[in-house]
Image 1: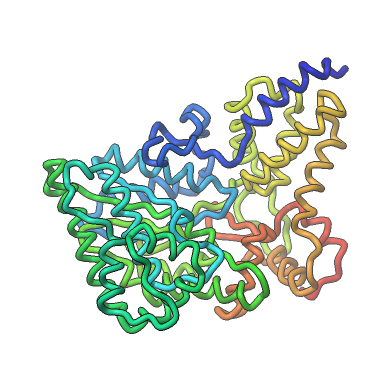
Image 2 (image 1 turned 135 degrees about the horizontal axis):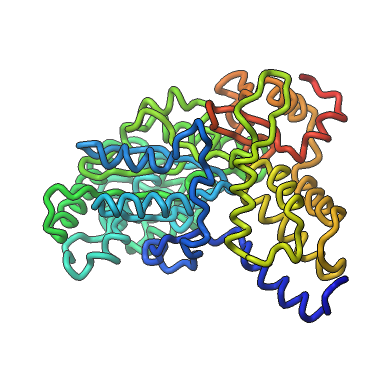
Length: 457
């Protein structure tokens, strides 16, 4: 029998907010997140991204950085829904325990992530972010290191000719113009193409100054300095298909053709990159330290990659890890959900944490009208709500998903098709796994839709 409505509403409100999917776990590093509200470390499920035959990608990356005698640039990827920011905070904590000085910057504060990028605006904003984080931590001790936005403005004023726009008057104005003024950003990209090598030299000079100041402040001439650049994996186009393709292609160009320009003497840097770049991981990973892209895949709710033509088998290990997350966030969840219902949602999410928590929230909301415990019809309603976001499927997309479902590979016909693959991944129609090997599968909620279609695969 349903509890009295006022009591049920109060409990539902607590549960609903406990499974918020926008708050990362901060591991006690609130100051690194710039005071963004984070969740306590007690809610983290150790090994949630692991599998018996797969190493922990975050620990592996931390070890690579710690063991390396020199600085390097690394690539890390994970789409929305994989818990990427939480894992980057864990990476920060690990590196801090290895006596590294770690800075973290969220690039959504500096770049419009729905527009194409070029190496010029990436360099200016990445080093600009470093200068701001450095000043926040060491400004009183080392006031001589001016903002890189100030230096970039001086460089643009003296070396680059702008015809249609003017260079903003100050450092803060330049930062704002890159993020919020599409006309200026477009002109910046166009007019700096002949000056990239000069800009790279300015960036490397500044990075080395920051490293030197940090080592002096810490009284440690060998201090390893690390900058973690978050949110670049969210690069995505909006509008027509040509604009979408242009943004995806620009990300590929920046991180492949310009890989050498993204390295800095003395400064170790970790770039988050869009997950679709993993499809060209062999070619791209070899250009960076570590020799590969460190990938945060979907939670392993399935066993290892199945044989072609076979469906993936559910993994009790992965499913239990996802349910453990609910155990840690709201102990009385069994008043709402039966255990098998939580396991069902974990499996139907395909290991996507965001979809999992979203379906739980949808079900909690329905509890206000249906009462508790929740019925299987409520669970199905939550699944249908998430499924509807991925429908309808165009015939070309359906054919591609059918081929992926059969082979469990990306089925990328050529590098020119990468933007289309990116769109399918961004829309979560294709999920990536890494247990035993990299493999792919359509989102489980699309399985019945694919079975009823004819497709072209």
